[in-house]
Length: 198
Image (cartoon, rainbow, N blue to C red; front, side, top):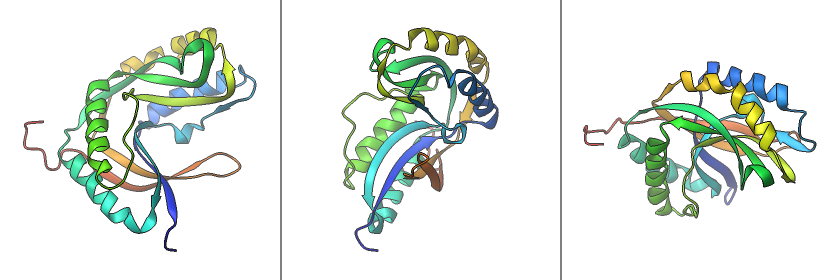
């Protein structure tokens, strides 16, 4: 139907082994904060660019720009590690697991996507990129410092589990009463137009 807007984003998926370790930690600490909504293990990802509502009939043009950007961006090695909260651990509304490796490369790719997609009507980010996995959202701010400290210890093995990022996933997010469902629209390889100059 003409004029339909899809809720879209671009992300780096994480390996299954990494997902399993995170899922075990989230299950252990999931009851520690009343009213927190914990992200389902299958939904964990590193967001590169939140596109938001976008008209379905313009999807192919958007997808072409993403492919062009990805083709000129080299694959890179990433690793997760460290925990925190936005806006701060003591007044957290969002809990996250950070990136210990690949942050610079992910930020570069996110910046290229930001600049390129502005040409097809996607709003630029107004905050600097910080690579992370969102693990929980809180209805009201809470002091999560001690919980984050425990989680960080539990997730220490992530530092020894680096992974190659060779593609990005173009997702549609469908909101529902049980939380969002993320539907992959396309897997887009990095570096297919690389000439070795980065």
